[in-house]
Length: 96
Image (cartoon, rainbow, N blue to C red; front, side):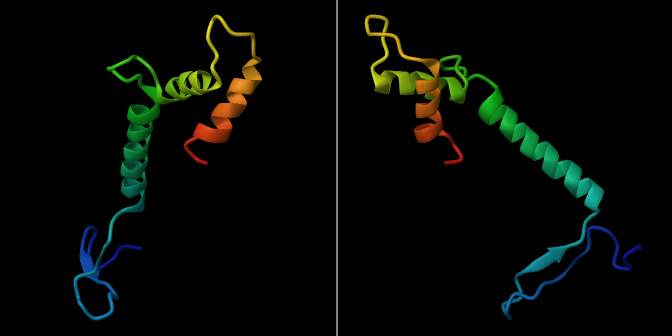
């Protein structure tokens, strides 16, 4: 299924007449590999690696902030972990 125009060739798209839209033909395997690698790196940098400023991952920062908002300090009564988890998931989860 070789394309006569070759891989990486671009063809005019249907942009409604202004002519600036282009479709770039590319190999699916290479595009999937590149796209997945970009996504994986963004997840690693954005969520999995601790921040150099305070050493915390975003999830840990959200948990500590929820505990602060609930007033959970060492001199206050005990609260169950599930209460904090529910607070974080309900208010601060990145996906809503």
